[in-house]
Image 1 (cartoon, one colour):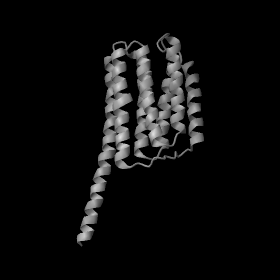
Image 2: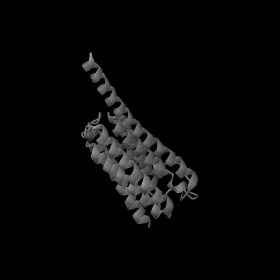
Image 3: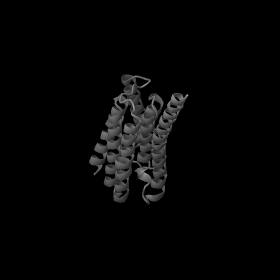
Image 4: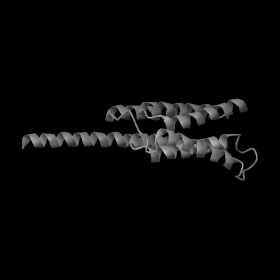
Length: 206
């Protein structure tokens, strides 16, 4: 079980670097979907079957569906160029990974609280999410970055889920914020569209 758990953490780390190196919005959404599925798998390995199902439904299903739906509704530019550039963004992600690995050996923690590599993977996911928020120019890509950062917080809380309820409720609240952000982007776009139609109608009347 430990080897499988660490393999999932390795895939999650590769997923983070891929997120920093991709410029297509649809690919970013697919990668964050895969991230939600990996989180569900980690919970299942950690004997949290009910939470795993909930995470798969929310992070692997509902939120990606909302993101794809909003992408189609607003006609978002499919190509997103990061402010840092793709190469520099990936190198920054690698630097965050190295820093997280270094920090794992320096932080005073209860022995056995975090399985090997869980802390670096969680911190790297959090840092990569923040890089996406800061380094991408469009609102939808920044929402994806927020979701990735929230996944990092969720990952760091897996060892604390002995009872399950409190930490999961906190992360579920953050997922609700993501859904509200996505719906806000869609509603804002629709309202601007109607305003443009209304202005054009009045210009025709004048």
